[in-house]
Image (tube, rainbow, N blue to C red):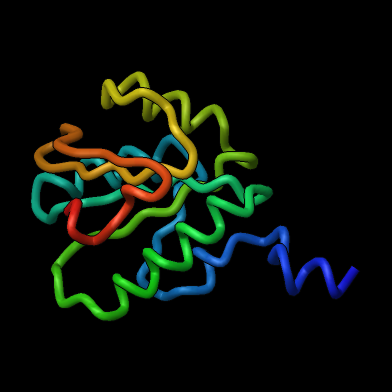
Length: 124
């Protein structure tokens, strides 16, 4: 099994290992992210922890973030653990669900979003 974990990645989300991520695990966390967007541009990365493409996109985005000097609040949502919150994000921000997906929020509203290979720090 170790061989497959090396090739395809662990089931655990790598987003939780980087200090810039704030996890969204409750409606309160989501409300805090949206409220925070009134002061600081906020992004939510929706990630499927079982998807190789999502894991690859996440790793690439994390590299971009580490090399960026942008003042952004970064939030991470594990889709498999919190599908209800993903659905709430889609409804509340009027953004069609995708995975992986990056949603940019300013002043409580989604101002941009992208999925798959279109996810980049340049979107922000």
